[in-house]
Amino acid sequence: EPEVTQTPSHQVTQMGQEVILRCVPISNHLYFYWYRQILGQKVEFLVSFYNNEISEKSEIFDDQFSVERPDGSNFTLKIRSTKLEDSAMYFCAIWTSGKVNEQFFGPGTRLTVL
Amino acid sequence: QKEVEQNSGPLSVPEGAIASLNCTYSDRVSQSFFWYRQYSGKSPELIMSIYSNGDKEDGRFTAQLNKASQYVSLLIRDSQPSDSATYLCAVSMTTDSWGKLQFGAGTQVVVTP
Image 1 (spheres, rainbow over the protein chains, first blue to last red):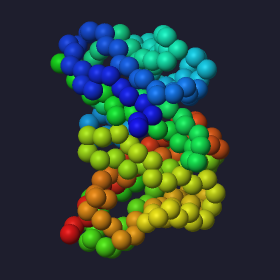
Image 2 (tube, helix red, strand yellow):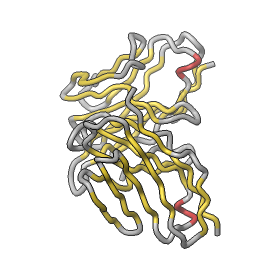
Image 3 (cartoon, helix red, strand yellow):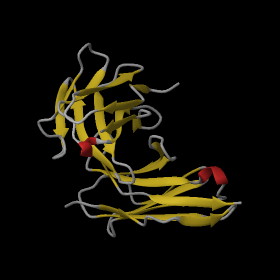
Image 4 (cartoon, chains in turn blue, yellow):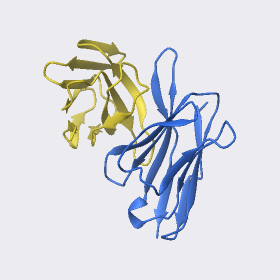
């Protein structure tokens, strides 16, 4: 059973539009992360979220980006005014502890900005 | 700029042979090291984590860490066609895996029957 799901699986939007990407963990987690991967490039850290606050963000995570946990379960990434270069796979990750401590990645949302 | 470097490949490996993947990192304070596997169009999935110098074995996989040389490697024994994927090296500044991960660009492995 996956630890985290993401919706939508694919989002197509026009440049300048706002998009909201959602991450739904199966159980309670304290640490959440967003990463992105532009086609053919490396996975890049965007932001980490701990105890309902941003704990760290990268230089990519500018004022166009925001994260929140509106209902205590879903974890969202909002891009206010999308640009062509925002086209990428966006992965939500959770930190899970147990037999192995790991950042477990969701299946991702493919964002296409036209 | 802190970097995690990997050979992009592709690394072609005959079925049943050993695949050897290398990764170097620039930040000496790095504490935790991970190998993820990523199939095309899919999300990364963790294969191995290693935190201290030496070797760590898990099934057909062995991770090796040398902090003095800032080098981490992954060996895949008895390579199978299903091992064909891109292998991502990731590094964290934290002693566990809860800190942000910095990824290398990945090494593509192709296992040929």
